[in-house]
Length: 334
Image 1 (cartoon, helix red, strand yellow):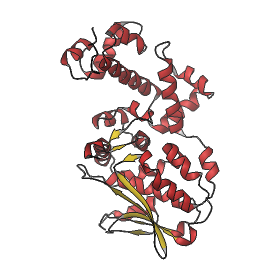
Image 2 (tube, helix red, strand yellow; image 1 turned 90 degrees about the horizontal axis):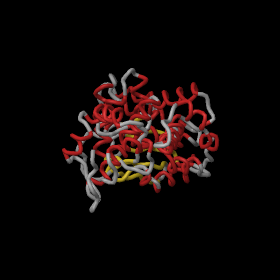
Image 3 (cartoon, one colour; image 1 turned 180 degrees about the horizontal axis):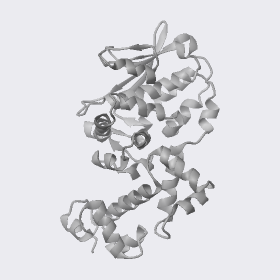
Image 4 (cartoon, rainbow, N blue to C red; image 1 turned 90 degrees about the vertical axis):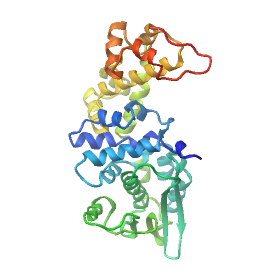
């Protein structure tokens, strides 16, 4: 696998927006600056390049006002936020099997990383590492990952039997990581890993079924993304119509989206933007047809939205040729 195919599932980025929102930072521009449109987060079958994900972590560090924001983001995750991977982990009968499920299924979340369960005389290691060369500092991603992996070990209900090893050298300020990774920390180690006493490996998971059953803001956001895409072009989705389809109140839906990090209006706007670019790239529709397919009743409103999204009119965008087409496809006409 070449370095340019290393990629992450968008579900690994879900709570970054919520973290930014909690600190009064509007996430929409931060994601776009990193090259990751919010609508990508709604498609668990897509992939985002590792370089872009690490660049987003760099944006976090520059804006957060604290040295280790990745660890705070990791705290926001439930294991089941991470799709089939997380559900397999919490469904395991004991901690050993949960760790094995995590290691064997890591490819569902990331292409280009290693996760192994290694056993030694007194302890086991859930060891994490990157493959290939890294063009961007991975620290924030690494810290968040270790928080999530530690949550697996804590499912056995014995935090005193769990510790964390960092390749990060000890330096002034790293003590703050005790708040997110627990009190048992080692720095300057050869590998990044979660250490687990062997005696708890065969312990059943505490409360795992309840964790698997509960839905959170990320689940709501994914469901809304599906509903919005299904509604276009037949109607303009509203928060009232989506709330009714979800069988929740508008206020509940707004709260869940706020916890996720993006408002309904931001989400709808970015879904329409990404669908527009997809349709232009296919070359199968005129601009009038595209306006209809993304829910605009007239081209004037569509053109104004397009210029806000792309900084140029639809005609200028098509003439620039900055998008690709499938072989044999035509070009959209304005």
